[in-house]
Image 1 (cartoon, rainbow, N blue to C red):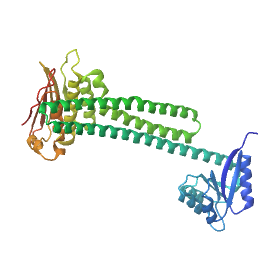
Image 2: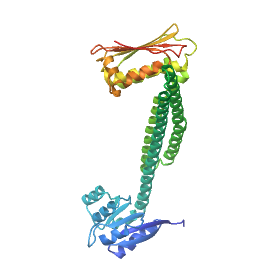
Image 3: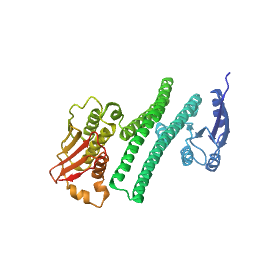
Length: 404
């Protein structure tokens, strides 16, 4: 005969004989019960201060009933399996008990079901506990991810403040300021790439490992529908976290830009943007030289197109967008045109509210870093054209911004 399973059972029962009958059924079912019998609400409240594996409660007691006992258990906030047992009860009462939160309802003349019911409820309680722990673990991963992003953002912000302070202290010329900002832009892109790789490689691999373990658990629990449902729910949560991680990594630094270059990156960017915003984008990309353009030039071109599309989705109310890229001599020309509501560029550039001019200034500074020229043509009701002419070799020129 195998070793019996230890079981801490709290009996809410006024009859010693009935309580002993329940314990006998548990012993016959393979359990080694350690029990306490209570028959008043006060005794139940006192007993609930201790640890129990399961509660077996008579439905009718002299001073209170099983549903009152169930409410007392719920008031503690603990997830304790609770089985109601009655001598005779109608279907309506059984349904009411289950809706109130009882895990099972047994008749005293059907106690042969007791041990299997207890085994099932203990197993279900364990599944619920594991599911809650998995949810806590996933939340911990999210919190750690957000913390890392906040820390990196704070570091970049601190670096920006340090650079600006150095410029003010030295009263450097515009050329010195541009060189420092140029280094900051490179540092930001390097940091974006590093964080994106860390998200994709480290956290992505860990989540993949979680998925593999869940798959193994699913294969081992095909005959346990309750556990199988819990495992599949956790797998769904893991899929969501994997998609979030992939999206964050892509937004920080699209890997295709480093691997395959500007043309394919713009195709991917415009396709995803068009699908998300339900606005068609016409993309004209002439053949580029067999040799890759400088990575910094490709990065700035991509960020310009990305920022222009972001502004269109937020403000333009456009029906169509057209993007054209052209290599002309020693310049790379990028144009983003929309048929939206338009605006007054001069008014936006002069506004004291940085939120209104952040997008334009962001594009202006990116072009400024490599000595290009940014032109913005727009007026209310006439759409907007953003044009950038970027030197392919010279990164020390001066950006000129025109509004019209």
